Image (tube, rainbow, N blue to C red; front, side, top):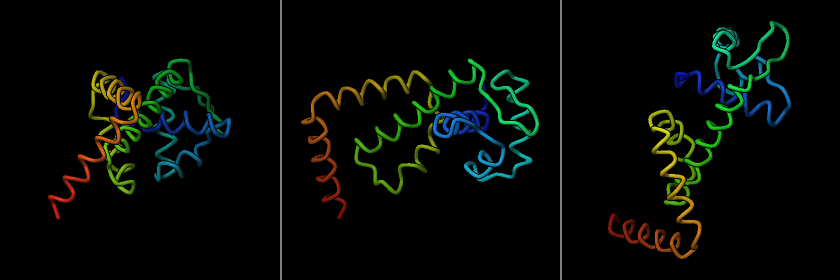
Length: 142
């Protein structure tokens, strides 16, 4: 299993390849706000662990194992963002909150959150009821 840091890299590499068609060390470093030398070290580790294939001065490609994990990590991130929006978390907090919790939840918890999101979205009145509860609790706090 990849570490949380490895997951961040795999997720970012997956996103870059999906959006640009390639992922280079400089783009990964910029996206993750780290030094290119740090990216190079991690990419070499991910290569050794069979998550990607890397050749110096070339782009890199995810292995089938890396693609599978990358896709699942992007799903997890997007699901948590969706969930936090549904339950009324302020937009300016969502990204930071997701980054803070995504590596600390089991896949079982992620799957149950997915079930809950699906349940809430199946009937728009459920989300509206949740928003009413949220507004009532805000009024009590004021």
